[in-house]
Image 1 (tube, rainbow, N blue to C red):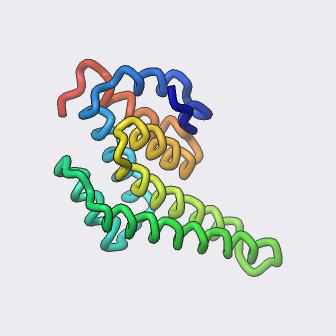
Image 2: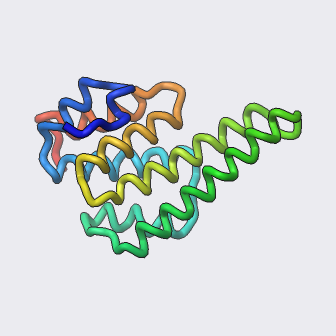
Length: 152
């Protein structure tokens, strides 16, 4: 079993992911990514295109994966810059918190595009859950998809 960071938040959910179908895992990756992007208002065109690709159950191109990763890296760098500015009093905790959440949201989309459905679900869920104060807000989305009564 490959270790993923979702185990830090919910070992139980990781076990459920291990027994899920590829379709369920892809649905989880898409749903948690979409939810966190909507929550924090990421409107970058590459993020929108990536979510559209995921919603159609299409595999992303290498170029799309690279563009989303580049954007996620850019947003993460902006968060780190703000964090440094906070240390010197030039940015507020709220600004840093929002920047962190947006960086995690972009990263969730980047992971959702992973070639491995298991990695996509685990890491997108971890990143999205890291963006909010209550991880259950995100893990409950995954739980619903993995439940027997979920209809795709």
